Image (tube, rainbow, N blue to C red; front, top):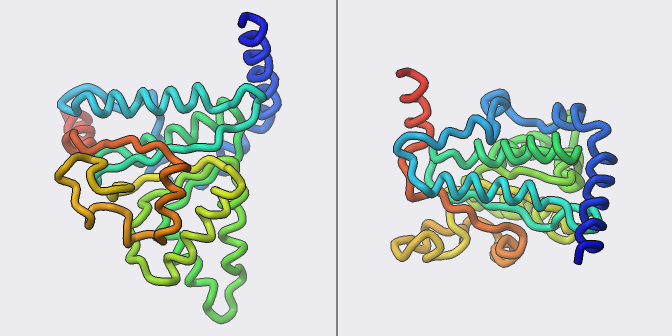
Length: 238
């Protein structure tokens, strides 16, 4: 057992050292909007009336980062999906995890707001557009880790469904980890018995993707706490 443990630590050290070579550059290439560039686990506020759920969400992030490398030094295949109403700190945590992975392991990561992505792709159909759909999707399909913010927020038109399928299914097939934030649950009852079907992703993403999401990401509920954004602003103005 001791030898196996030592071997595992050695593999991690070698993998981390290899990936860290361009960590700073990759951190700058994450595509995180200015609004979220200050989001870190270290400044994720847990004091005040935020409840134990945020503490457990923070711990889930810490465990995810700690166990991100497999024993052979490869990246883990699964991600996280932060679920709950707006203003609870979902995007803060997802961005903070992405930063940590880029800084600790030197992974190639990308942040994308799904509604903005759809709008950008629709713009490629205009006459004279300099990029096409493939140009926009390829960096997201090939990145080591991607944060997809506001999953399910856009009305599920056929175009939206096709775009989402191209992105998520390609990452699923390539076994690349993806982090999600969403106001919608993966299944009814997941956030408690009062969660109805209209609060789930069913009908908002292609049905074939719902089952994939269960395999791709562990749910991290943030729904039993007050408005994190409001609490944070109140603390800052004291």
